[in-house]
Length: 149
Image (cartoon, rainbow, N blue to C red; front, top):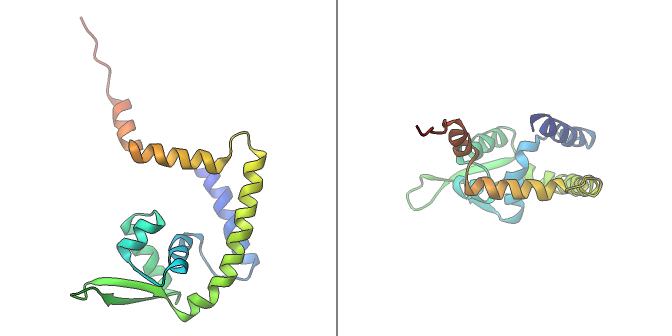
């Protein structure tokens, strides 16, 4: 699994480099959410992007440091952090969307060459793991079967 991720993620990163973009693939879930809606809290970003809240917090911090996002206090008491694209992030978005379209076409061509489309297999695996997490499966597999005497 790790090797597959390296092959795919490395190629996506190289596509950004080839397009002249200084951009990390891990930013994409956050950018996609903010491309669809103007702002979101960290919790909303995590939920809509399908990532954990700690991952969303870390990614937003990195993106803010790189000038792609603005983070302001929000909510009734000002404790929520509301995230939106910075002007630099907004300018980058059309070039990213072109890369995402090319990546989608490449993924479609990969699916067409596989006996079982990777995208469908991954979607099914995610759905099954959301029902019964892999950690639970490992714990269950580690339990020794009882012997009757």
